[in-house]
Structures are given as C-alpha cells and as structure tokens.
Image (cartoon, rainbow, N blue to C red; front, top):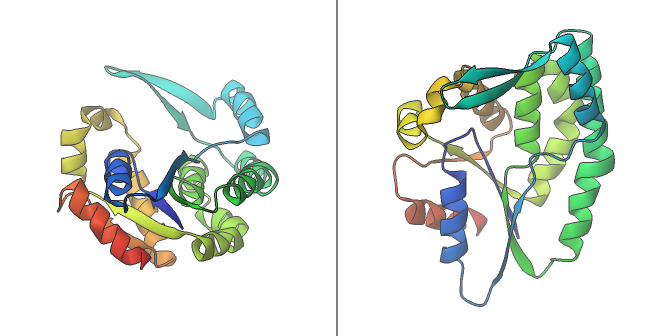
Amino acid sequence: MKIVFSGPDGSGKSSIVAALSRELDEGQLVHISWRRFGFVLARAFNLFGRMLGFSYYEQTPIGPLGYHNYKAPWSYIYICFAWFDCMVFILPKWWVVDRFKTQYVTIIDRFLFDIVADLILSTKQTRFVLWMFHASLKSHQARHVCVFLICSQKVVEERRPDIVWDKSYSEKVRIYTLLRRLYSVHGVHTDRMPPNETARRVLKLCV
C-alpha cells in the first residue's frame, strides 16, 4: 500500500506522516519517502531562467525565498522539460524503488500532484500543465491512496510564522484546491483534529 500526502507548506504533512507511521499495526514494515523533486533538465533550465530573471530569490526577515515567474514561450519549454524529467527520471526511479519494497506500507510526503502544483505556480499555464500531466496523474491516482491535507491559512501562520512572508502562499492554496476538486482527491482538514485522529481517518480511507 502506498499513501501519498499532498498540500501546501504548513498543512501538516510531516506531523501526519509521523502519526500515521505510529498508527499502523505493529509488525508492519513502514517506508517513509519524500518525492517532490528530482528534476534534471528542468533544474538546468532553472539556472538559465535565473539569468533571464524568471527564477529569483527575495530577501525576507526569515531569509531568502525563491520564486519562479516564467513567461511564454519559456514557460512551455520549462513545462516540457519537467514532464520529460518525470517520465524518464522521476517516475521510473520510484517505480523501481517500490518494486523492492512491496512488503512495506509506503508513506509518501509529496509526489506528482505537488510537482504539478509547483509547475502551475511557476508558469501560470494551468491548462497546458494539466494537459501534459493528466494521464500521469490519473495513473498516479490508480496506484496510490492520494490524500490532500487542508488547513486554514490562519492556523498555518500560527504553526509556521515564516509563511506570512511567502507572497505566493494564497495562490498555492488555490492551485491545490483546484487539483483536489478536479481529480476528486480525498481531502482531510488538519486544523480540525489532532494528528493521531487525522491519521486514523486516513487509514479508514485505505480500507
């Protein structure tokens, strides 16, 4: 069984992953994995984009925060590179890893939905990103139990004061909401119950 948690920063992924690993039956082998990145060509293109001013950092009181703001036609090139990386490097890599861990319950902290959300945020090309990744997302859903974690921005800011300085946070929440509704992914509100109770609710979704 493979359970994937997705959601914006501060929505409680790390806490729920830890709680879920404790809630699983004794004797079950648990593998915790973080799979959000892994780009090759897209990472190299980001270096080029930084020279063009599309990829940059802003200094804030809590340190530098990175942003991407790709414009057409560069945005389409970036999306195509990211799609190629996913098809050739990222997804095959984790497919192989999972083949060696079939006896494990794999808990994944961010994966394909998060990669897609990042691309939409970076390029503003929602339709093109979804067109490129739609088949992969449907296949991803079929092979994993996907759960989106939902938390109000007020609670997130209480947990993570640094979120206040992220000027793109509201847009991230909007994109995750769009993906959750568009693909009918299970959503769990982490601001309404403690992590252990949330973990038990997630286990019920896996039955």
